[in-house]
Image 1 (cartoon, rainbow, N blue to C red):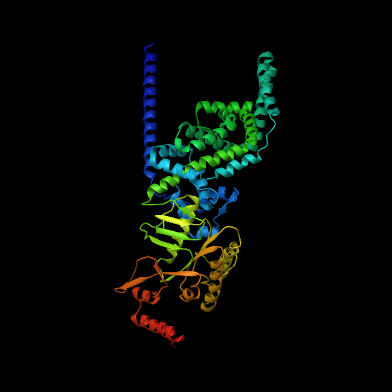
Image 2 (cartoon, rainbow, N blue to C red):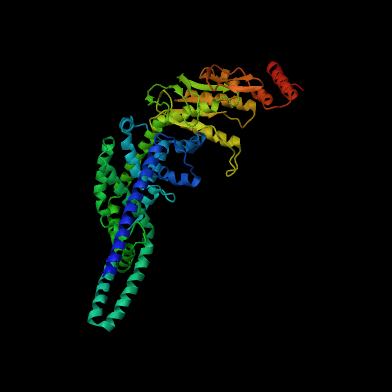
Length: 556
Protein backbone atom coordinates (compact mmCIF):
# COMPACT_ATOMS: atom_id res chain seq x y z
CA UNK A 1 0.00 0.00 0.00
CA UNK A 2 2.81 2.36 0.93
CA UNK A 3 4.52 1.64 -2.40
CA UNK A 4 1.38 2.59 -4.29
CA UNK A 5 1.13 5.85 -2.35
CA UNK A 6 4.75 6.65 -3.13
CA UNK A 7 4.20 6.03 -6.87
CA UNK A 8 1.07 8.17 -6.81
CA UNK A 9 2.97 10.99 -5.11
CA UNK A 10 5.83 10.76 -7.58
CA UNK A 11 3.38 10.83 -10.48
CA UNK A 12 1.54 13.79 -8.97
CA UNK A 13 4.77 15.74 -8.39
CA UNK A 14 5.97 14.99 -11.94
CA UNK A 15 2.62 16.11 -13.32
CA UNK A 16 2.75 19.38 -11.35
CA UNK A 17 6.31 20.05 -12.55
CA UNK A 18 5.24 19.34 -16.12
CA UNK A 19 2.30 21.76 -15.86
CA UNK A 20 4.47 24.48 -14.28
CA UNK A 21 7.15 24.11 -16.96
CA UNK A 22 4.51 24.16 -19.69
CA UNK A 23 3.03 27.38 -18.32
CA UNK A 24 6.50 28.94 -18.04
CA UNK A 25 7.35 27.91 -21.59
CA UNK A 26 4.11 29.37 -22.95
CA UNK A 27 4.68 32.64 -21.10
CA UNK A 28 8.26 32.81 -22.31
CA UNK A 29 7.22 32.08 -25.89
CA UNK A 30 4.43 34.65 -25.64
CA UNK A 31 6.91 37.25 -24.39
CA UNK A 32 9.28 36.44 -27.25
CA UNK A 33 6.49 36.92 -29.80
CA UNK A 34 5.37 40.18 -28.17
CA UNK A 35 8.93 41.55 -28.20
CA UNK A 36 9.46 40.43 -31.78
CA UNK A 37 6.29 42.10 -33.05
CA UNK A 38 6.72 45.32 -31.07
CA UNK A 39 10.36 45.53 -32.16
CA UNK A 40 9.40 45.44 -35.84
CA UNK A 41 6.63 48.04 -35.74
CA UNK A 42 7.93 51.29 -37.15
CA UNK A 43 10.87 49.55 -38.83
CA UNK A 44 11.22 49.09 -42.58
CA UNK A 45 10.99 45.48 -43.74
CA UNK A 46 14.12 43.64 -44.83
CA UNK A 47 13.01 40.03 -45.39
CA UNK A 48 14.80 38.31 -48.27
CA UNK A 49 12.31 36.91 -50.79
CA UNK A 50 13.12 34.61 -53.70
CA UNK A 51 11.57 34.53 -57.16
CA UNK A 52 9.49 31.57 -55.97
CA UNK A 53 8.25 33.65 -53.04
CA UNK A 54 7.16 36.47 -55.34
CA UNK A 55 5.44 34.01 -57.67
CA UNK A 56 3.39 32.80 -54.69
CA UNK A 57 2.74 36.28 -53.27
CA UNK A 58 1.69 37.73 -56.63
CA UNK A 59 -0.82 34.97 -57.45
CA UNK A 60 -3.76 36.88 -55.96
CA UNK A 61 -2.91 40.00 -57.98
CA UNK A 62 -2.46 38.08 -61.22
CA UNK A 63 -5.55 35.90 -60.91
CA UNK A 64 -8.13 38.19 -59.33
CA UNK A 65 -9.44 40.49 -62.09
CA UNK A 66 -9.97 44.16 -61.32
CA UNK A 67 -11.29 47.11 -63.29
CA UNK A 68 -8.78 49.45 -61.65
CA UNK A 69 -5.54 50.51 -63.32
CA UNK A 70 -2.69 48.11 -62.58
CA UNK A 71 1.03 48.85 -62.68
CA UNK A 72 2.39 46.77 -65.55
CA UNK A 73 5.45 44.54 -65.27
CA UNK A 74 7.79 46.92 -67.12
CA UNK A 75 7.03 49.82 -64.80
CA UNK A 76 7.07 47.55 -61.76
CA UNK A 77 10.55 46.25 -62.60
CA UNK A 78 11.89 49.66 -63.69
CA UNK A 79 11.08 51.12 -60.29
CA UNK A 80 12.49 48.19 -58.25
CA UNK A 81 9.05 47.63 -56.79
CA UNK A 82 9.97 44.21 -55.40
CA UNK A 83 12.39 46.01 -53.09
CA UNK A 84 9.71 48.57 -52.30
CA UNK A 85 7.33 45.74 -51.40
CA UNK A 86 9.90 44.14 -49.08
CA UNK A 87 10.36 47.49 -47.35
CA UNK A 88 6.59 47.78 -46.77
CA UNK A 89 6.01 44.12 -45.97
CA UNK A 90 5.67 44.10 -42.19
CA UNK A 91 2.94 41.47 -42.45
CA UNK A 92 2.76 38.19 -40.55
CA UNK A 93 0.21 36.19 -42.52
CA UNK A 94 -0.06 35.13 -46.13
CA UNK A 95 -3.40 36.94 -46.34
CA UNK A 96 -1.87 40.31 -45.54
CA UNK A 97 1.20 39.68 -47.66
CA UNK A 98 -0.79 38.78 -50.77
CA UNK A 99 -3.27 41.63 -50.29
CA UNK A 100 -0.46 44.18 -49.77
CA UNK A 101 1.23 43.11 -53.00
CA UNK A 102 -1.97 43.59 -54.96
CA UNK A 103 -2.61 46.90 -53.21
CA UNK A 104 0.82 48.16 -54.27
CA UNK A 105 0.13 47.35 -57.93
CA UNK A 106 -3.45 48.64 -58.16
CA UNK A 107 -4.05 52.38 -58.50
CA UNK A 108 -7.20 53.57 -56.79
CA UNK A 109 -9.06 56.11 -58.94
CA UNK A 110 -12.52 55.61 -57.43
CA UNK A 111 -12.28 56.43 -53.70
CA UNK A 112 -10.85 59.25 -51.64
CA UNK A 113 -9.05 57.00 -49.11
CA UNK A 114 -11.05 58.56 -46.28
CA UNK A 115 -11.90 55.20 -44.73
CA UNK A 116 -8.31 53.99 -44.79
CA UNK A 117 -7.02 57.28 -43.39
CA UNK A 118 -9.30 56.86 -40.39
CA UNK A 119 -7.76 53.44 -39.75
CA UNK A 120 -4.19 54.73 -40.19
CA UNK A 121 -4.88 57.62 -37.84
CA UNK A 122 -6.38 55.26 -35.25
CA UNK A 123 -3.35 52.97 -35.24
CA UNK A 124 -1.02 55.96 -34.96
CA UNK A 125 -2.78 56.88 -31.71
CA UNK A 126 -3.40 53.29 -30.51
CA UNK A 127 -0.25 51.35 -31.31
CA UNK A 128 -1.07 48.72 -28.67
CA UNK A 129 -4.19 47.80 -30.67
CA UNK A 130 -2.10 47.52 -33.83
CA UNK A 131 0.30 45.17 -32.06
CA UNK A 132 -2.59 43.07 -30.71
CA UNK A 133 -3.91 42.57 -34.22
CA UNK A 134 -0.47 41.78 -35.61
CA UNK A 135 -0.12 39.12 -32.92
CA UNK A 136 -3.28 37.40 -34.19
CA UNK A 137 -2.02 37.50 -37.76
CA UNK A 138 1.34 36.13 -36.54
CA UNK A 139 -0.49 33.12 -35.12
CA UNK A 140 -2.21 32.62 -38.47
CA UNK A 141 1.22 32.64 -40.10
CA UNK A 142 2.57 32.43 -43.62
CA UNK A 143 2.60 29.43 -45.92
CA UNK A 144 5.82 29.28 -47.92
CA UNK A 145 4.55 26.61 -50.31
CA UNK A 146 1.18 27.86 -51.49
CA UNK A 147 -0.69 31.06 -52.23
CA UNK A 148 -3.64 31.16 -49.83
CA UNK A 149 -5.84 32.63 -52.53
CA UNK A 150 -4.84 29.75 -54.82
CA UNK A 151 -5.74 27.23 -52.12
CA UNK A 152 -9.13 28.84 -51.54
CA UNK A 153 -9.78 28.80 -55.29
CA UNK A 154 -9.84 25.01 -55.12
CA UNK A 155 -13.18 25.20 -53.35
CA UNK A 156 -14.68 26.28 -56.67
CA UNK A 157 -13.89 22.81 -58.04
CA UNK A 158 -15.10 20.80 -55.07
CA UNK A 159 -18.14 18.69 -55.89
CA UNK A 160 -20.21 17.26 -53.08
CA UNK A 161 -19.69 13.53 -52.91
CA UNK A 162 -22.31 10.96 -52.04
CA UNK A 163 -22.13 9.80 -48.41
CA UNK A 164 -24.29 6.68 -48.90
CA UNK A 165 -21.37 4.29 -49.12
CA UNK A 166 -19.77 5.84 -46.03
CA UNK A 167 -22.99 5.54 -44.03
CA UNK A 168 -23.15 1.94 -45.26
CA UNK A 169 -19.69 1.33 -43.83
CA UNK A 170 -20.90 2.56 -40.45
CA UNK A 171 -23.91 0.23 -40.58
CA UNK A 172 -21.75 -2.74 -41.63
CA UNK A 173 -19.40 -2.16 -38.72
CA UNK A 174 -22.30 -2.12 -36.24
CA UNK A 175 -23.74 -5.30 -37.78
CA UNK A 176 -20.36 -7.05 -37.78
CA UNK A 177 -19.74 -6.06 -34.18
CA UNK A 178 -23.20 -7.30 -33.15
CA UNK A 179 -22.58 -10.67 -34.84
CA UNK A 180 -19.62 -11.24 -32.52
CA UNK A 181 -22.12 -11.72 -29.72
CA UNK A 182 -24.87 -13.43 -31.69
CA UNK A 183 -22.84 -15.85 -33.85
CA UNK A 184 -19.24 -15.64 -32.58
CA UNK A 185 -17.64 -17.82 -35.27
CA UNK A 186 -19.44 -16.17 -38.16
CA UNK A 187 -19.12 -12.81 -36.39
CA UNK A 188 -15.32 -12.95 -36.25
CA UNK A 189 -15.01 -13.47 -40.01
CA UNK A 190 -17.74 -10.94 -40.73
CA UNK A 191 -16.18 -8.39 -38.41
CA UNK A 192 -12.70 -8.81 -39.94
CA UNK A 193 -14.19 -8.59 -43.42
CA UNK A 194 -15.99 -5.35 -42.53
CA UNK A 195 -12.75 -3.88 -41.14
CA UNK A 196 -10.86 -4.71 -44.34
CA UNK A 197 -13.68 -3.33 -46.49
CA UNK A 198 -14.09 -0.14 -44.45
CA UNK A 199 -10.37 0.63 -44.30
CA UNK A 200 -9.84 -0.13 -48.00
CA UNK A 201 -12.83 1.98 -48.98
CA UNK A 202 -11.62 4.76 -46.67
CA UNK A 203 -8.22 5.11 -48.31
CA UNK A 204 -9.72 4.91 -51.78
CA UNK A 205 -11.98 7.92 -51.18
CA UNK A 206 -9.62 9.74 -48.80
CA UNK A 207 -6.88 9.89 -51.43
CA UNK A 208 -9.28 11.50 -53.89
CA UNK A 209 -9.89 14.47 -51.62
CA UNK A 210 -6.62 14.67 -49.66
CA UNK A 211 -5.44 17.90 -51.31
CA UNK A 212 -8.61 19.70 -50.23
CA UNK A 213 -7.90 19.05 -46.56
CA UNK A 214 -5.05 21.58 -46.78
CA UNK A 215 -7.57 24.14 -48.07
CA UNK A 216 -9.93 23.37 -45.20
CA UNK A 217 -7.16 23.87 -42.67
CA UNK A 218 -6.53 27.42 -43.90
CA UNK A 219 -10.19 28.24 -44.10
CA UNK A 220 -10.84 27.02 -40.55
CA UNK A 221 -7.83 28.98 -39.30
CA UNK A 222 -9.05 32.09 -41.14
CA UNK A 223 -12.49 31.86 -39.58
CA UNK A 224 -11.14 31.32 -36.08
CA UNK A 225 -8.65 34.20 -36.35
CA UNK A 226 -11.37 36.42 -37.78
CA UNK A 227 -13.44 35.64 -34.69
CA UNK A 228 -10.47 36.62 -32.51
CA UNK A 229 -10.08 39.90 -34.40
CA UNK A 230 -13.78 40.66 -33.94
CA UNK A 231 -13.46 39.72 -30.26
CA UNK A 232 -10.81 42.41 -29.70
CA UNK A 233 -13.54 45.02 -30.22
CA UNK A 234 -11.01 47.47 -31.66
CA UNK A 235 -12.92 50.56 -32.75
CA UNK A 236 -10.53 51.47 -35.56
CA UNK A 237 -11.62 48.46 -37.62
CA UNK A 238 -15.24 48.20 -36.47
CA UNK A 239 -16.62 48.59 -40.01
CA UNK A 240 -14.50 45.73 -41.34
CA UNK A 241 -15.38 43.60 -38.32
CA UNK A 242 -19.10 44.12 -38.93
CA UNK A 243 -18.64 42.87 -42.48
CA UNK A 244 -16.57 39.90 -41.31
CA UNK A 245 -19.33 38.94 -38.89
CA UNK A 246 -21.67 38.47 -41.84
CA UNK A 247 -19.11 36.26 -43.60
CA UNK A 248 -18.49 34.17 -40.50
CA UNK A 249 -22.19 33.74 -39.86
CA UNK A 250 -22.68 32.21 -43.29
CA UNK A 251 -19.69 29.90 -42.72
CA UNK A 252 -20.33 29.04 -39.07
CA UNK A 253 -21.38 25.45 -39.71
CA UNK A 254 -18.00 24.83 -41.38
CA UNK A 255 -16.14 25.08 -38.07
CA UNK A 256 -18.54 22.83 -36.14
CA UNK A 257 -17.02 19.40 -35.78
CA UNK A 258 -13.93 20.41 -37.76
CA UNK A 259 -11.82 18.20 -35.47
CA UNK A 260 -13.51 15.19 -37.04
CA UNK A 261 -11.50 15.56 -40.24
CA UNK A 262 -8.17 16.06 -38.44
CA UNK A 263 -7.27 19.17 -40.41
CA UNK A 264 -4.32 19.93 -38.17
CA UNK A 265 -2.59 16.68 -38.90
CA UNK A 266 -1.41 13.94 -36.56
CA UNK A 267 -0.01 15.46 -33.39
CA UNK A 268 1.19 12.08 -32.15
CA UNK A 269 -1.05 12.18 -29.08
CA UNK A 270 -2.93 9.07 -27.95
CA UNK A 271 -6.25 10.80 -28.56
CA UNK A 272 -5.28 11.65 -32.13
CA UNK A 273 -4.07 8.11 -32.82
CA UNK A 274 -7.38 6.75 -31.57
CA UNK A 275 -9.23 9.28 -33.75
CA UNK A 276 -7.28 8.08 -36.80
CA UNK A 277 -8.62 4.55 -36.31
CA UNK A 278 -12.13 5.90 -35.73
CA UNK A 279 -11.89 7.83 -39.02
CA UNK A 280 -10.69 4.78 -40.91
CA UNK A 281 -13.55 2.64 -39.62
CA UNK A 282 -16.44 5.10 -39.63
CA UNK A 283 -15.26 7.50 -42.41
CA UNK A 284 -16.33 10.44 -40.26
CA UNK A 285 -13.77 12.80 -41.82
CA UNK A 286 -14.98 12.02 -45.35
CA UNK A 287 -18.63 12.42 -44.31
CA UNK A 288 -17.82 15.74 -42.61
CA UNK A 289 -15.80 16.85 -45.64
CA UNK A 290 -18.74 16.34 -47.99
CA UNK A 291 -21.03 18.22 -45.61
CA UNK A 292 -18.57 21.11 -45.30
CA UNK A 293 -17.90 21.30 -49.03
CA UNK A 294 -21.61 21.61 -49.65
CA UNK A 295 -21.81 24.60 -47.29
CA UNK A 296 -18.73 26.25 -48.79
CA UNK A 297 -19.93 25.73 -52.36
CA UNK A 298 -23.03 27.75 -51.49
CA UNK A 299 -21.01 30.44 -49.67
CA UNK A 300 -17.92 30.73 -51.88
CA UNK A 301 -18.33 34.51 -52.12
CA UNK A 302 -18.17 34.77 -48.34
CA UNK A 303 -14.91 32.80 -48.34
CA UNK A 304 -13.19 35.26 -50.67
CA UNK A 305 -14.74 38.29 -48.97
CA UNK A 306 -13.36 37.09 -45.62
CA UNK A 307 -9.93 36.56 -47.23
CA UNK A 308 -9.93 40.09 -48.65
CA UNK A 309 -11.20 41.81 -45.50
CA UNK A 310 -8.60 40.15 -43.31
CA UNK A 311 -5.91 40.89 -45.89
CA UNK A 312 -7.03 44.52 -46.05
CA UNK A 313 -6.78 44.93 -42.28
CA UNK A 314 -3.26 43.53 -42.13
CA UNK A 315 -2.09 45.53 -45.16
CA UNK A 316 -3.23 48.71 -43.38
CA UNK A 317 -1.27 47.63 -40.32
CA UNK A 318 1.81 47.31 -42.55
CA UNK A 319 1.27 50.80 -43.97
CA UNK A 320 0.85 52.19 -40.45
CA UNK A 321 4.17 50.59 -39.50
CA UNK A 322 5.80 52.07 -42.62
CA UNK A 323 4.56 55.55 -41.72
CA UNK A 324 6.01 55.19 -38.24
CA UNK A 325 9.39 54.32 -39.79
CA UNK A 326 9.62 57.57 -41.80
CA UNK A 327 11.15 60.84 -40.66
CA UNK A 328 8.24 62.54 -42.38
CA UNK A 329 5.50 61.75 -44.88
CA UNK A 330 2.39 63.36 -46.31
CA UNK A 331 -1.02 62.44 -47.58
CA UNK A 332 -1.34 63.29 -51.28
CA UNK A 333 -3.55 66.04 -52.62
CA UNK A 334 -5.47 65.15 -55.77
CA UNK A 335 -6.53 67.80 -58.25
CA UNK A 336 -8.17 68.01 -61.66
CA UNK A 337 -5.32 70.22 -62.84
CA UNK A 338 -2.67 68.56 -65.01
CA UNK A 339 0.35 69.15 -62.78
CA UNK A 340 2.90 67.56 -60.48
CA UNK A 341 3.93 69.36 -57.31
CA UNK A 342 6.40 67.78 -54.89
CA UNK A 343 8.07 69.36 -51.88
CA UNK A 344 11.05 67.82 -50.10
CA UNK A 345 10.42 64.50 -51.82
CA UNK A 346 12.87 61.61 -51.35
CA UNK A 347 13.45 58.06 -52.57
CA UNK A 348 12.15 55.65 -49.87
CA UNK A 349 14.79 52.96 -50.46
CA UNK A 350 17.83 55.16 -49.87
CA UNK A 351 19.40 55.12 -46.43
CA UNK A 352 20.49 58.76 -46.62
CA UNK A 353 18.32 60.28 -49.33
CA UNK A 354 18.62 63.80 -50.71
CA UNK A 355 15.23 65.47 -51.00
CA UNK A 356 14.12 67.48 -54.03
CA UNK A 357 11.21 69.74 -54.92
CA UNK A 358 9.49 70.52 -58.19
CA UNK A 359 6.26 72.20 -59.30
CA UNK A 360 5.29 71.79 -62.94
CA UNK A 361 2.29 71.98 -65.24
CA UNK A 362 4.38 71.03 -68.25
CA UNK A 363 6.37 67.94 -69.09
CA UNK A 364 9.91 67.86 -67.74
CA UNK A 365 13.21 67.21 -69.53
CA UNK A 366 16.20 66.52 -67.30
CA UNK A 367 19.77 66.74 -68.58
CA UNK A 368 23.00 66.39 -66.69
CA UNK A 369 26.03 64.40 -65.79
CA UNK A 370 26.43 60.69 -65.44
CA UNK A 371 25.63 59.43 -61.92
CA UNK A 372 24.37 62.86 -60.88
CA UNK A 373 20.91 61.74 -59.79
CA UNK A 374 18.65 61.94 -62.86
CA UNK A 375 17.40 58.35 -62.72
CA UNK A 376 16.95 58.41 -58.95
CA UNK A 377 14.86 61.58 -59.24
CA UNK A 378 12.65 60.02 -61.92
CA UNK A 379 12.12 56.94 -59.75
CA UNK A 380 11.40 59.10 -56.70
CA UNK A 381 8.61 60.93 -58.50
CA UNK A 382 7.15 57.76 -60.05
CA UNK A 383 7.22 55.78 -56.78
CA UNK A 384 5.55 58.60 -54.87
CA UNK A 385 2.80 58.95 -57.45
CA UNK A 386 2.18 55.21 -57.11
CA UNK A 387 2.29 55.44 -53.31
CA UNK A 388 -0.26 58.25 -53.46
CA UNK A 389 -2.75 56.13 -55.38
CA UNK A 390 -2.18 52.86 -53.50
CA UNK A 391 -1.20 53.38 -49.84
CA UNK A 392 -2.07 57.10 -49.64
CA UNK A 393 1.35 57.78 -48.13
CA UNK A 394 4.09 59.80 -49.86
CA UNK A 395 7.70 60.23 -48.82
CA UNK A 396 7.52 64.01 -49.15
CA UNK A 397 6.17 67.05 -47.34
CA UNK A 398 3.68 67.69 -50.13
CA UNK A 399 2.51 65.82 -53.22
CA UNK A 400 -0.16 67.21 -55.51
CA UNK A 401 -1.20 65.88 -58.92
CA UNK A 402 -4.06 64.56 -61.01
CA UNK A 403 -4.88 60.88 -60.57
CA UNK A 404 -3.21 59.19 -63.53
CA UNK A 405 -1.94 55.92 -64.89
CA UNK A 406 1.80 55.53 -64.30
CA UNK A 407 4.14 54.15 -66.97
CA UNK A 408 7.91 54.00 -67.26
CA UNK A 409 10.59 52.99 -69.72
CA UNK A 410 13.88 52.92 -67.84
CA UNK A 411 15.77 49.79 -66.81
CA UNK A 412 15.53 47.89 -70.10
CA UNK A 413 17.82 45.17 -71.42
CA UNK A 414 18.24 42.78 -74.34
CA UNK A 415 15.82 39.85 -74.39
CA UNK A 416 17.57 36.54 -75.04
CA UNK A 417 14.31 34.62 -74.79
CA UNK A 418 12.65 36.57 -77.62
CA UNK A 419 15.90 37.22 -79.51
CA UNK A 420 15.26 40.98 -79.41
CA UNK A 421 17.98 43.64 -79.29
CA UNK A 422 17.97 46.40 -76.71
CA UNK A 423 16.59 48.83 -79.29
CA UNK A 424 13.66 46.54 -80.13
CA UNK A 425 12.85 46.07 -76.45
CA UNK A 426 13.04 49.83 -75.96
CA UNK A 427 10.73 50.83 -78.82
CA UNK A 428 8.18 48.23 -77.71
CA UNK A 429 8.31 49.70 -74.22
CA UNK A 430 7.78 53.26 -75.47
CA UNK A 431 5.08 52.16 -77.93
CA UNK A 432 2.90 50.93 -75.07
CA UNK A 433 3.13 54.40 -73.50
CA UNK A 434 2.15 56.09 -76.77
CA UNK A 435 -0.78 53.67 -77.12
CA UNK A 436 -1.95 54.50 -73.59
CA UNK A 437 -2.30 58.18 -74.55
CA UNK A 438 -5.46 57.34 -76.50
CA UNK A 439 -7.28 55.99 -73.43
CA UNK A 440 -9.60 57.81 -71.04
CA UNK A 441 -7.15 57.70 -68.12
CA UNK A 442 -4.59 60.54 -67.92
CA UNK A 443 -0.99 59.37 -68.17
CA UNK A 444 2.17 60.37 -66.35
CA UNK A 445 5.20 58.62 -67.79
CA UNK A 446 8.90 58.40 -67.01
CA UNK A 447 11.51 57.76 -69.70
CA UNK A 448 15.22 57.46 -68.94
CA UNK A 449 17.64 57.94 -71.85
CA UNK A 450 15.06 57.63 -74.60
CA UNK A 451 16.17 55.45 -77.54
CA UNK A 452 19.72 55.01 -76.26
CA UNK A 453 19.94 51.85 -78.34
CA UNK A 454 20.50 53.63 -81.67
CA UNK A 455 22.85 56.17 -83.26
CA UNK A 456 22.95 59.83 -82.22
CA UNK A 457 21.30 61.40 -85.28
CA UNK A 458 18.32 59.04 -85.41
CA UNK A 459 18.01 59.04 -81.63
CA UNK A 460 17.66 62.83 -81.40
CA UNK A 461 15.31 63.04 -84.39
CA UNK A 462 13.02 60.26 -83.15
CA UNK A 463 13.17 61.31 -79.49
CA UNK A 464 12.05 64.82 -80.44
CA UNK A 465 8.96 63.50 -82.19
CA UNK A 466 8.04 60.89 -79.57
CA UNK A 467 8.53 63.15 -76.54
CA UNK A 468 6.76 65.99 -78.35
CA UNK A 469 3.77 63.78 -79.13
CA UNK A 470 3.50 62.61 -75.51
CA UNK A 471 3.55 66.17 -74.18
CA UNK A 472 0.82 67.28 -76.58
CA UNK A 473 -1.56 64.56 -75.45
CA UNK A 474 -3.43 64.09 -72.17
CA UNK A 475 -0.16 63.34 -70.40
CA UNK A 476 2.84 64.60 -68.50
CA UNK A 477 6.26 63.17 -69.31
CA UNK A 478 9.37 63.16 -67.15
CA UNK A 479 12.34 62.32 -69.37
CA UNK A 480 16.08 62.20 -68.69
CA UNK A 481 18.66 62.41 -71.46
CA UNK A 482 22.31 63.02 -72.24
CA UNK A 483 21.34 64.64 -75.55
CA UNK A 484 21.53 68.31 -74.64
CA UNK A 485 20.13 69.16 -78.08
CA UNK A 486 16.70 67.98 -76.95
CA UNK A 487 16.51 70.82 -74.43
CA UNK A 488 16.27 73.32 -77.30
CA UNK A 489 14.23 71.16 -79.65
CA UNK A 490 11.54 70.52 -77.03
CA UNK A 491 11.56 73.83 -75.17
CA UNK A 492 7.96 74.67 -76.17
CA UNK A 493 6.49 71.57 -74.52
CA UNK A 494 9.07 70.78 -71.83
CA UNK A 495 10.51 72.62 -68.86
CA UNK A 496 14.25 72.12 -68.58
CA UNK A 497 15.98 70.94 -65.42
CA UNK A 498 19.40 69.49 -64.74
CA UNK A 499 21.70 67.84 -62.22
CA UNK A 500 25.32 68.85 -62.00
CA UNK A 501 28.63 68.20 -60.22
CA UNK A 502 31.83 69.79 -59.01
CA UNK A 503 35.38 68.61 -59.66
CA UNK A 504 37.69 68.99 -56.67
CA UNK A 505 41.15 67.50 -56.29
CA UNK A 506 40.67 65.17 -59.28
CA UNK A 507 37.45 63.88 -57.72
CA UNK A 508 33.83 64.53 -58.67
CA UNK A 509 31.29 65.57 -56.04
CA UNK A 510 27.51 65.50 -56.59
CA UNK A 511 24.91 67.37 -54.59
CA UNK A 512 22.05 65.31 -56.14
CA UNK A 513 19.86 68.42 -56.20
CA UNK A 514 17.71 69.33 -59.18
CA UNK A 515 18.29 72.76 -60.76
CA UNK A 516 16.27 74.79 -63.24
CA UNK A 517 17.53 75.05 -66.82
CA UNK A 518 19.51 72.73 -69.05
CA UNK A 519 22.88 71.25 -68.13
CA UNK A 520 25.99 73.22 -69.02
CA UNK A 521 28.65 70.70 -68.00
CA UNK A 522 29.65 67.16 -68.95
CA UNK A 523 31.57 64.80 -66.73
CA UNK A 524 32.39 61.72 -68.79
CA UNK A 525 35.95 62.89 -69.53
CA UNK A 526 36.40 64.22 -65.98
CA UNK A 527 35.46 60.76 -64.71
CA UNK A 528 38.41 59.32 -66.66
CA UNK A 529 40.71 61.55 -64.67
CA UNK A 530 39.02 60.76 -61.40
CA UNK A 531 39.39 57.03 -62.08
CA UNK A 532 43.14 57.38 -62.64
CA UNK A 533 43.49 57.32 -66.44
CA UNK A 534 46.70 58.83 -67.89
CA UNK A 535 46.63 62.61 -68.24
CA UNK A 536 47.50 62.27 -71.93
CA UNK A 537 44.37 60.22 -72.63
CA UNK A 538 42.21 62.68 -70.70
CA UNK A 539 43.79 65.71 -72.40
CA UNK A 540 43.41 64.35 -75.94
CA UNK A 541 39.83 63.30 -75.28
CA UNK A 542 39.05 66.79 -74.03
CA UNK A 543 40.61 68.37 -77.13
CA UNK A 544 38.61 66.13 -79.46
CA UNK A 545 35.38 67.01 -77.67
CA UNK A 546 36.12 70.74 -77.75
CA UNK A 547 36.95 70.66 -81.48
CA UNK A 548 33.72 68.84 -82.30
CA UNK A 549 31.68 71.33 -80.25
CA UNK A 550 33.36 74.26 -82.09
CA UNK A 551 33.59 72.94 -85.65
CA UNK A 552 31.15 70.04 -85.84
CA UNK A 553 33.95 67.72 -87.01
CA UNK A 554 36.21 65.26 -85.26
CA UNK A 555 39.97 65.77 -84.86
CA UNK A 556 41.99 63.24 -86.85
